[in-house]
Length: 199
Image 1 (cartoon, helix red, strand yellow):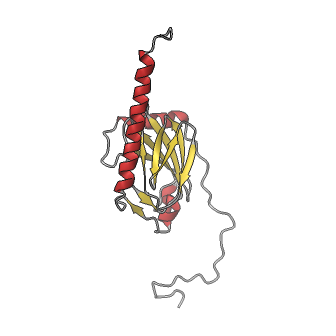
Image 2 (tube, rainbow, N blue to C red):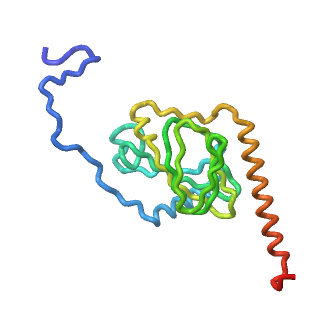
């Protein structure tokens, strides 16, 4: 027989590997394109999970079937939070690096508060429960890089949108945020009440 009749086998007799890899060509995502997408996301009604986001993908990603990404192994997500908003808790086995490109805010990662501003970079490990909060008066925009695209191609990406309750951590984080907001408002009020002549 020339070929196996068993679908569990693929005959590779005499197979030779391609001399060159079919690499994806570079693409440019302009500042204007990013700003337009940020504006579009900001105009959407707040979703139930609070996550306004778009994936930035390479035009050829669909050739691989699953795992949309900017390259075969890396996913880039544009994320937007309006003032006073926060996302719902989530965890996953992909790891992330976050770049704040506009505004400021903070993330709660396994109960630990990570504050950030424009151009700050931070990451957190896989399976850490986290959520993001915009406690500022301005739009908050992040670029998030992760290996989710690779894990999806391997069919091992685990995403838990209802992580185990961490009520004590949630309550403590909310209390801390409320106290900081109250202090900031008090300081602002105090500053406006003072005479410019120091009396």
